[in-house]
Length: 120
Image (cartoon, rainbow, N blue to C red; front, side, top):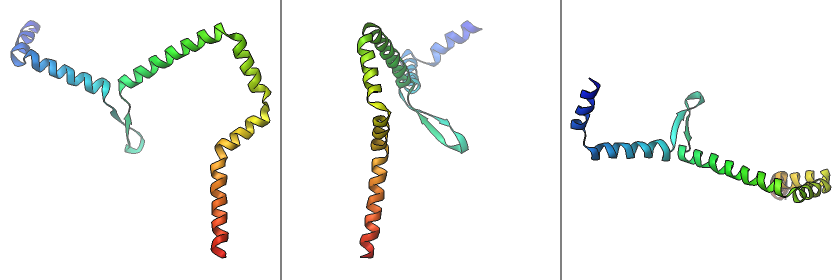
């Protein structure tokens, strides 16, 4: 029976049609974003599988290269760590505030300035 179905498939579909179906399937499965259901009925669009696989491969390769570099250059790594620690906790906190709070503080200043300029 299985052989009979296999033979009939050849009669139902040409090789060119089968090839087109396979190409379309591969395109959809690996290269197009796909959608899944999220919470509360939201539709979440996920990146294509090919991109996920490439990212995993890239990060795996990058980690391997970094591991080799660290193993081959322990003094450079040690110097960089000591330098970062030597900058001190205070500088690290100041850098954090500068990076993360500067725009909020500037916006607050603009709002205060705007309030006083309206009153005058």
